[in-house]
Amino acid sequence: MNNPIHVVAGIISDSAGRVLLAQRLPDTHLAGTWEFPGGKIEDSESAEHALRRELHEELGIDAGAIEPLISVPWSYPGKAIVLHALRVVDFSGDPRGRQGQALRWVDTNDMRQLPMPLADRPIVTALRLPREYAITPEPTHDTAAFLEQIDVVAAAPGMRLLQLRAKALPAHELHALASAAQARVKASGTALLLNGNVDLVSSLCLDGVHLPAAELMRLHERPLGADRWVAASCHDEKELAHAAAIGVDFAVLGPVLPPRSHPGLPALGWARFAALRAPAPFPVYALGGLDVQDLPAALAAGAQGVAGISTFWPGADQ
Image (tube, rainbow, N blue to C red; front, side, top):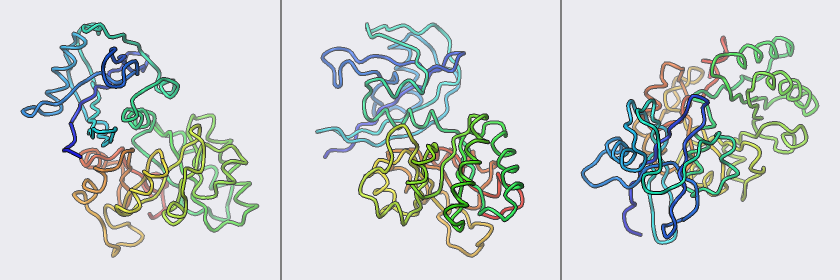
């Protein structure tokens, strides 16, 4: 297949947090579907310059500050694209369909029910995910203290995603702990993913599963429906490719820096992380030796954000 076509998409939000979508015109590729407004990047343009031009031409608005969200490589029959999604922080003017296209403001959770180009789906996922993904350490024998710390983590500003990582617990104890943790985080709006154990996720109606790399590689299809999160731990090209093949929603990739618990462990570094992340058609968190201060570096490398244990769980090593 020929070199991919690079396309830019703008994420434009209103004061209620809804995002602007435009309907593709008749007699165009994927006519009638709803997409993020934008268009093709010309040879002489940067993605940001192309977006500013497209938004002015299509919607009659002038974009202010712009920041990257995600780049999605995607192959359609006979055509490969890389879709660069940029978040428009502010803009001037009132959006209107200057080419006759219909517009609508849509909550990100409602986008999953709309017909959209497949390449736009990972952008919806990125919009639904936070910048920080907290992971618990292995639970101690003091269950009450462990659950109290979950309360603290779940209540932190911006915290919307938590992984319960409890590999050493007997089955009956894990069942009780996961059930208690789900009840505690639900009120805060934080999604709880369980590390491994798809059956328990289903029986307790947890928010999703996080697949360890070994479990990921044993699967031949997505283990849960689209109403639950499916995430995976990846370390190389093979694991990332398999994660894409079974349709995960997002992954963590690392270690980017030497983990504090294993300072001699080989690390990817930011350049290698960026190279591995680029072909992945889903959001990828950076993991390993990181904390929230590393978020700008992670975003610059194409990450959805940072994931880890110790930065969110005081006293723990990751």
